Amino acid sequence: MKRKFKLAPVLRARRAQENAAKGDVARARLEAVTTDEHARLLDQELEARIVHPETSTALAFAATRAALRARATDLSAARAAADRAHGMVGEHLAAWSAASSRRRSVEKLGERHAEAVRRADEAADQRAVDDLTTRRKEADR
Image (cartoon, rainbow, N blue to C red; front, side, top):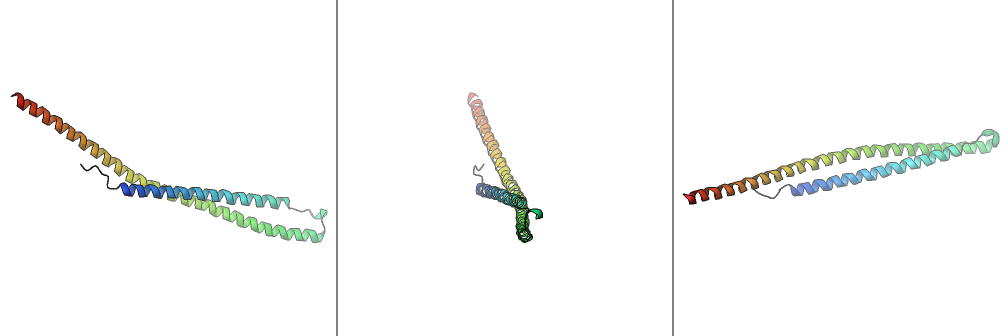
C-alpha cells in the first residue's frame, strides 16, 4: 500500500487556518478587555464628577452638567464598542470551532490512512511468514 498520505498538505493548511482563527480569538478577547476597561474608567470618571447644586454656583453647575452629558455620551459609545467587541469574540470563537472541526476531519482521514498502511504491512509480513513456512514444508518433503 502507498505510504504517503496525499492529504498531508491539506492538513497543514487546515492547521494553519485553525492557528490563524485561534489568533483572531485572542486578539478579539484582548480588544474586548480593552474596551471594557475603557468603559469602566469612563464610568468611574463620570461618577467622580457628579456635582451637587448646593455646593456650586448655578453657572458652574450648568457647565458641569454639560460636561457630564458629553462624558455620558462618551460612556455610551464606549459601552457600545465593548458590546461589539464581545460580539466579535463570539464570531471568532465560532470560526475557530469550525476551523478546528475541518482540521479534525482531515486528521481522522490521516489516522485511517495510517491504520490501513499498518494493516497492509502486517498482512505483508504474515504472507512472508506463510511463504517461508510453505517453502520449508515443501523442502522437507
